[in-house]
Image: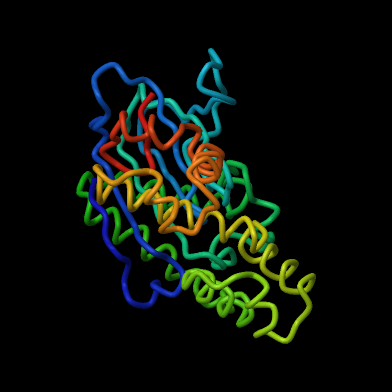
Length: 270
């Protein structure tokens, strides 16, 4: 996978852009994978093969197609997708709060779902983007095409609400929701509503998701560390509390995650 930060003008809105050549990196025999939540929205454009197919759970037989040009909304649980038919793909991970780069709909409306880009963008614009992406097989050039498309949308983007930007920074520094409410001078209800509109989930769930991400980082950085020590380091009540939270976000326990040892931390082959 080719992955890099976008051009400077897009960095307030996009964390990274990426491209694959359609060659599967999954272990031999793996036909599905669990995709773990990141707290961000993702744009995905498959440039060949079958449309993306997802499943209600890992045991569902047939699943259903969600298209080849997709916005993945913010979610607080994993989803299961097919990896049986890999295809060249281009995508971007947006920064929290940058929903206006994609749609005028609030982030909470798009949360927890895969939305076809045909339903968000002018079809002529999407058709032009796909045509330009398909006209080159070079990953770097494809990323440049994608960035150029997003840069054209910037004049309509106002930026992230200051209250939301402040809350995001404080949550990343592990401050509590109560602390951020006191700092802001607004009511808890107002902060929660404004945050949910912009991000697609409540501050409490977002904070839990950030902590889950830190646990993932610790599991991958220190394979020998005890789960009890990781739970204590992240201020869980105990290891059982961490395991329950982890399974809610990952679909597997921390122990099973370690045994699977996925090559990409948030893509767990089944």
